Image (cartoon, rainbow, N blue to C red; front, side, top):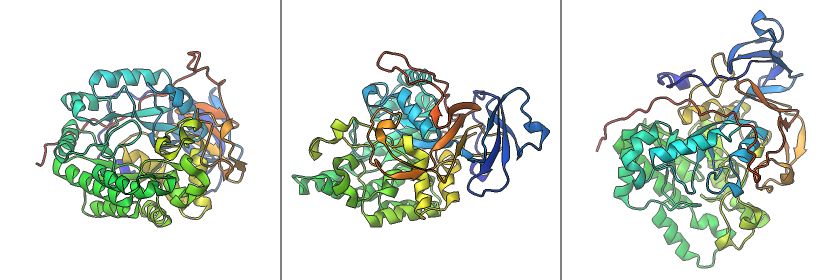
Length: 479
């Protein structure tokens, strides 16, 4: 429980949920005797040996017999782009959240990097209302940390999980370059009491690198968006956050330099956390010949040495969380010539199988892997009630068979893109049952509803609720 010691109690009532009893599940990764998990009103109220405790009796509620499947907490993806509202044709909350369930994810933190941006209180509230009508999973929303946000930032922060700042330009967003502006944005975040969540690439360095490659291809992508650009930007973000007294979450670390920069900040006792993504842990720049522009993402996938440093950062806790950065585009947007090819790839549909692949390859222990997508992921975004199979936590569960392998066929996945960088890969651990706050969302590997008719305006079942946040913690600037 140490990750939440001293964390203020979240405001507002618990959103509730269903009553459910799951029996005959094997705790993963340690194994042992089957257990039963009792959920009432959406919260876990008892865990014990299967069938042995009166508290675990069904009492008229739905019962799921796990039949020896492995059980883990519902997974938390701290970085997704559902491009909705605004670019629903590329994904949308309806299909995106159903893709999340298919991957074992019951909570997401979403970044809006297309208009309408969340730069006012009214825009943030409209976005929350929109998502509430569409999301099947629980959700946190990052507001946009821009000069336009500053007048209303304290009010925006009341509903925001964090404040997203692009220090390097990426899909739909230009990067901030002016040092005084950047410093002022961190001061605004500190006064609003929410952490700054950053895309760290130094914009001037990106421009300098691009000038060296007047006719680039995907093979030069990691040389243009290189490790130096990331390192300079992380250094700037850490310095600004320290001066302002702001918390900092560095998104999608990609390089050995970036990992070491964060490691030193943590050793100095600074309020800095970090996350990375599947594609940086599973792919390298050497895959460019095989995948072409389909592996174009920002920041770029880098060298095998950078990948090794990222994995070491995950192992030693320098990087708390593993995420998808699910950022889908139609395949025709990816298969253009490099200068016009869109950056970003889908992967949330395969979330837990991709996680488990890191264990199967022997690069992460099962325990560390699981923490990075549950309890440590929750801590990295200052979330409560999520990420543990423990009494008092939300009844979010995933049941799976770690020994059953399935070949990835992207056309069969539920989110919109229908292509994958992992097409044809044999993965294991596909979720068989997914439960969100006591409600069964996926059974026998199938979503518990028909495919929603999004184009016709039929949104399908929702039920996701805002993630419970601690109250904002405004601090005085140190500048």
